[in-house]
Length: 246
Image 1 (cartoon, helix red, strand yellow):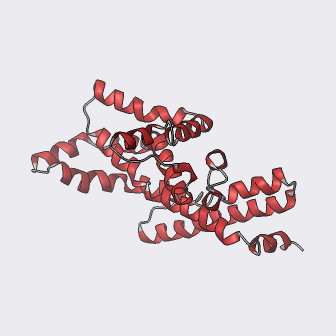
Image 2 (cartoon, rainbow, N blue to C red):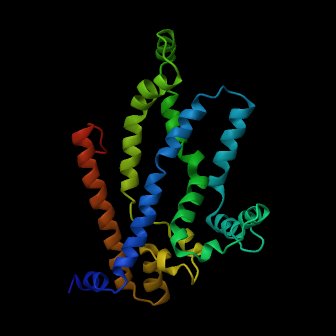
Image 3 (cartoon, rainbow, N blue to C red):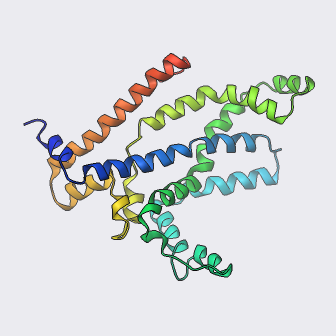
């Protein structure tokens, strides 16, 4: 009896589709993981001044935009008739399209907007790690003839690697925990095939249909996967790089 709801979910006809949608968005998000690292390295090499401060402000600010506003901006930008994207396409002789109605574009739209919103914010921890670099080490490398690429490859990256591994392990701990609010707000009847994920399914079953026990079991199933992922990758990281969460 204790596994009844788990079995019900596994035998649900759309179980494979829900898991595939969740994993697709998670893997796409994982592909953007290096961007904050690269951005932090680029920003670290800028001299302090107006340009650096302005760049930081412009990339940090989107993080403080609410999810509702972000999704509204996304939908307005991708609107077929008045959206900025379609206006630019038509200006170059193309034809506008209803991008939010295309199921195969839902995951890329979700990930690209998430990258825009969190790029600057996620780079802060890497900037903090780079700030602890010994300036004498940098000066010595330049005296020895190291160019910018050599410094990035042999100083920046090794110095950042423990922080990168820890952040990646934390990312693995939420591998299938796709944010409900953003997915739900970007959902429509035309992209449901690719936008139904675990979090929206839990909401549908628990809040909309009142199946609280069943939705709790699905939520627990989601967390068990996250625990398995973080334990597994933590063990691999500890064996390979000697850096781990515990």
